[in-house]
Amino acid sequence: MSEKNERKVMLVPCSGIGKVHGLIGREAVFRVAGELRPQDTELACLAEIVTQDKEIRERMNGRLTITVDGCPKMCAEKNVRLVGGEIFTSLRVVDAFRTHRGAQAGSATELTSDGWQISDELADRLALKVDEARQGGNKDA
Amino acid sequence: MLEVKKVGIISCSGEECAGGGISRLAARHVLESTRPGRTVTICLPLFLAGGEEERYFARTFPTITVDGCEKRCAFRATEKLSGHVTKALTVSDILGAESAAAPSFSQRQLNPELERKIDTVSTALTEAVDEIMGKPAAAEHLLKPTVPPAGMRLL
Ligand code: SF4
Ligand code: SF4
Image (cartoon, rainbow over all chains, first blue to last red; front, side, top):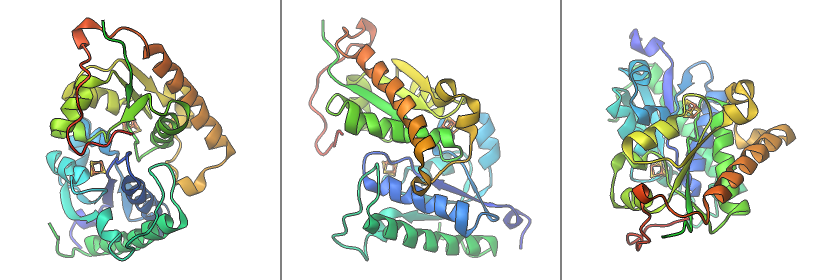
């Protein structure tokens, strides 16, 4: 394992607040950071990354990061790149819906049981990506 | 002189501490329950992109930012990348630094204490909306009631 990979993997969900997708991604990230891989991961606020301040640029510079975005605008991925973060992979909530066509997932305020299921499945995928990142696996991006 | 008809709310939704989650849920509560139809929101990072929707939002609505902690990222990012902020609220000012700096929470962990805190912040936010509503728009930030870009979904 390289020196860089001995550090925790940074997880950054997008700040989607208008639709359910942002909440699904946010909850998936909290599940990984809080329960599935707490020792291997660290969180950074996307809003702070967006400011591009010196402090956050220094913290993110070269940090192996996995982003989770709610829609194709890919705000988390784009902004992490802008502050020098190294994207290991970018997960998209819309992809997590592919196996749940027609699911009523809830709203940006709360998830239904369908929404929690989609979020938990995304969290499982994310945890595996964290393991790959820690083991120095190939980056997707 | 034009009157303010809707107010934009931008929450930091910060992921690193409880204050960010409280800012997000307080904003959602005002958008959905206390002032629906009078308030709108947009994802904060979109301000950076500066596309048609963001320009519409920034040009059209007086904006309240709601930040989780004293770093005030939503306020600073909005001022830097988008435009004028009419009012800036911070969870740590309203609830105290300790409540804001507590670990971030999943909505699975919501409990009566967290709900009380969210309620306190949403009350402050509702008052801030009311303070701005109905007032004449400041001349230097003249509000132009324009047609939203096609496909834009305002809450
Ligand atoms: S990726 Fe989409 S849902 Fe997420 S913050 Fe950006 S615009 Fe909002
Ligand atoms: S204001 Fe605080 S909680 Fe909100 S994004 Fe910035 S650092 Fe995170």
